[in-house]
Image (cartoon, rainbow, N blue to C red; front, top):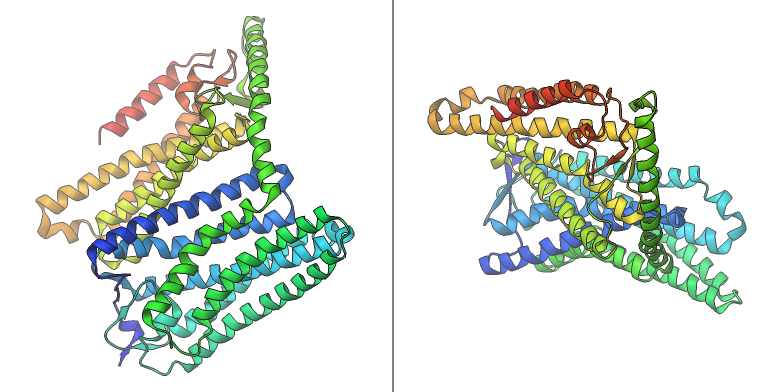
Length: 539
C-alpha cells in the first residue's frame, strides 16, 4: 500500500492502442471541441448583443453555454493529448484538480437546468407575477446558488479522495474522474463512495424533482391554453429543455450513481465521452434550432446592417465636415479630453463581405483560444512539461490569448451589432493592453532564446542557471517592461489634441492610427515609439 501523498504520476491510457484509430479520433474530437466552443460562445455573444434576449431564461441559457465550454475544456484537451502519445503521465494534484473542476461544472449544470425549469414554470403558470418573481436579484441569486452548490460538492469529494491510499499500478483508462480514481484505491473508500453517491444523488434528485414538478405543472397549464399557437410555443420551449435534461441526467446518473463500477470499461468510457464531449455540442443546437426567439434575434442583427451602412455614411460625412470646421476655427484644436468616442472604420463596408469576415475571424479567434488555452492546460497538468522552456511557453500562450482577446471580440461585436464606435476610455484601455502584451511578448521571446542558448551551450549548468526563481524573475521583468512602456506611451499619446477627425482607419485603437488624428506636435511621441520598437527588437 502506498499513500496518495507519495504518488508522483498517474498514467492515462487514452481511448485506444491503435495509432491509426487514435489519429482518426483526434481529428473527430478536435472538430467536436471547436464546434462546442464556437456554438456555445456564439450563443453567449448573441444573447449579450440582442436586447430582446435580455430575459432570465436566456440569462440561464448563457450560463449553461458557459458551463458547457468550461466542462469541455477541462477534459477534451487532455484527451487530445493522450491520443497523440502512447502513455500520458499526469500528477495526482493535476488529476484531482481536473476531477474537482469537472464536479463543479457538472453540479452547477444540473442546478442551472433545474433553475431553467423553474423559470419556465413561473413564465407559463404565473405570467402576471413573472417579472416580480424572476426579478434580476432573484435570477442572480439562483445562478450564484448553482455555482455554490457545485463548489460544495467539489470540496467534499476531493477532500475525501486526497485522504485515500493508492496501490500500483497508477493507471487510468482515460481522463481523471472520481469513479475511475476510486478503482486505484487500496484503502477502504466506502466513506468516499458514500460522499460521491450522496453529493451526486442529492444534486440529481433535488434538481430532477424541481424539473418534474415544474414540467407537470406546465403541462397541465398548457392543456388549458385556448390558443393553438400559444400551446405550440409552450410545448416547443419545454421540449427543448426536456431533451437537454434527458440526455444530461441519463448519462450522469449512469456514471456517478452506480454503487460500484459494474459496467464494462468500454461501456463506462463511451458514456463518459458522451456526457463530456457530445452533450456540450448538442445544447446550443437544441436551444437555438428549436427556439424561434433566437432565430428572430439573429435575423434582426443581420438585417440591421442595411440601416447601419446608411447611417455610417451620413455619420462619416457629418463628422468630417464638423471636425474640419473645428480645425479651421480660432482655437485650431479640440482637446482629447473633450472626445466622447472614436469611430473604427474596420475592414469593409460591403455587406456581402461582412458575414464572411465574421465567420472567418470568429473561427480564427476560436482556434486561438482553444489552441493557446489547451496548450496552457496541457503544460499545467503534464508533469513532464514542468521545465523552464514550457514555463515560458505557457506564458507566451497566455499572452497570445490576451493579445487577441483585447481586439477580436470588439471587432466581432461590431459585425454583430453594426456599431463600430469605441469610447475614449475604452480606446485608452485597449491601446494600453495592446502595448503591454506586445512589448511583453518581445521580451518573453528573448527569454526563451536565452533558455535555448543555455540548454544547448551549457547543458551541465542548465539547472543551476535556469532555476525556478530566475525563470520567474525573467517573466516578471518582461511584464514589468511591458507595463512601463504602456504607461509611457499611452500617457503621452492621450495628452495630444485631436482635431482632424475622430475616425480611426483601423479595426482597433493603436498609437500609429491615433498619430494621424492629432493636430498637435507628435515628434516626442514618435521618438518614444521609435525607441520602444528599437528596444523590443534589440533583445
